[in-house]
Length: 429
Ligand SMILES: Cc1cc2nc3c(=O)[nH]c(=O)nc-3n(C[C@H](O)[C@H](O)[C@H](O)COP(=O)(O)OP(=O)(O)OC[C@H]3O[C@@H](n4cnc5c(N)ncnc54)[C@H](O)[C@@H]3O)c2cc1C
Image 1 (cartoon, rainbow, N blue to C red):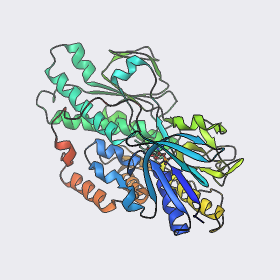
Image 2 (image 1 turned 180 degrees about the horizontal axis):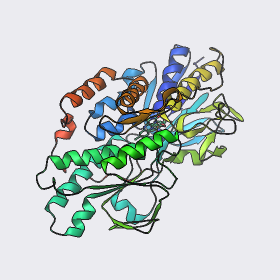
Image 3 (image 1 turned 45 degrees about the horizontal axis):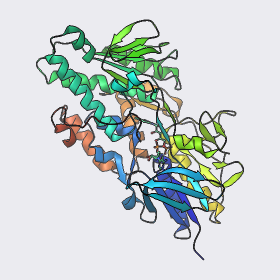
Image 4 (image 1 turned 90 degrees about the vertical axis):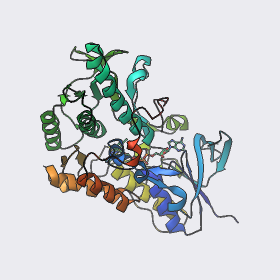
């Protein structure tokens, strides 16, 4: 008799750790199949370091076949799951259709960048969810500054030197902080740009930056960013967007060629087609991460609405830490359902958060104690090193090189401006 087959859809943080935990526990007593559009897992929390040229892109990718030798990796995008006949339909890297029957299924498809479907927006707006988007954003910033330097039209010059980040959650705040430093560094190396002001606006509809985090972290981030010259606007959302810029809800029209959308992420489109109960767009699961009424299906990470046992009535937020821990637990609980070990509920100690504010600045509250500056920066980097699945030494090497030789760029970033193809789609994984 052939061993039971477990299909895992998505190899982000949750999927990678689910596959790793499951294959270790089952030791060949189950066939573990991992379906993902790429042959690597991408560590999103360090993507900004890639955009900033501090890390080589290879540092944030982990080749699946090498890291998970006991797992069968299928290069494909799942487009339909038939929960009745227990089959996963996918399209492989050559656009050929494929089919996988499963005994257990783990769905870990994460989320996609929320980009408003307004045609005028698409021309100048960006998401930030993969290496291509990260490198594209950096190239775009560099290109805008170079074009501003040579334009004779003052209105165009101002628009090209203005960058708007919409949404000051974790990613938006880090992005504005890193982006502003990045643009300053580019301008320093260009004689015609040194005297020209560069404007960064960070707009957030809520009352404060980082609305989901401790108020002390919000205060630190606001203080650091304002001191550096970032125009931080709270209680501000976006109104009309045109090809020339955008109108903010406070009435000001901002001429710009760059709008970065960071209003969180929304769950992957695959989830809507599953006909399973959802909460806030995420698939509802019980505390064991399995779908009520479907004990053979587990969901975790950003795609899952997992009950937060530390905050009754709430679900766990979309975050890397939850994704890693839920992925491991899903792997162990699936193994338990196949007779290896005992299943457990998802519990977590609230270990606080870290926010990288670029340079030597960060805000952190591990164990509930808020602090900032170099100590927070060290804590931020330590947390990321702890959760990145591989490449730790190489990452430390890149960081050290960046600290000792500031302004140096990783090999990818030595290419001259405008070398990156621009025909990237808005909503990619
Ligand atoms: C720029 C950025 C910075 C961040 N920084 C932090 C941070 O500092 N700290 C923190 O805690 N969190 C951070 N986060 C959030 C964190 O990265 C996510 O919460 C976490 O990655 C979610 O893990 P996941 O496995 O659920 O989804 P993901 O990591 O998004 O992985 C989903 C995987 O599923 C694949 N997939 C999607 N659809 C399909 C399909 N149809 N078929 C097959 N495969 C599919 C995708 O290609 C991907 O590999 C950050 C996020 C971003 C975007």
